[in-house]
Image (tube, rainbow, N blue to C red; front, side, top):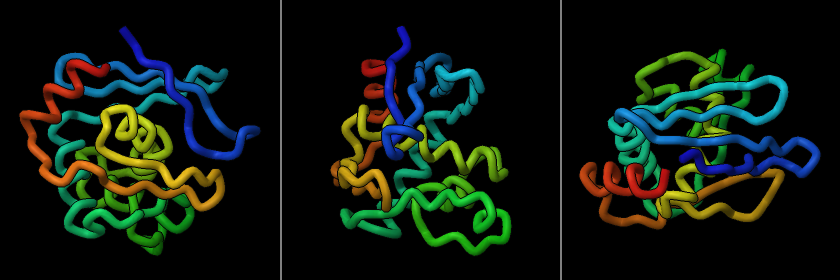
Length: 142
């Protein structure tokens, strides 16, 4: 059964979406008229989390998904840039899915949001990342 979540932008720009885990893939689909879709494999999510852990430890990291800066390779380190660097689908649109993946990582209990709608940041709250635990959490929570 899909889980309903919301992106972390300002209320007038926040987007409701559904996320569902099936066959090793987290499927995300916006609920607005655009029907934006993203998908991330469990392995990809694990690699993203491990990279964030190496880069930031338990410090906050930014959304970092500005389309122009990503396209020019000038975006600051953060979730979007990490997706672009370690993700399986290396394109800007996939990296921009960080707006959706962040709330999914919160729902999983892996990240904590800073509560800011401008200057969106998260921090890892899981110290011991395990691929097996991630698979179990994805299966149970999505």
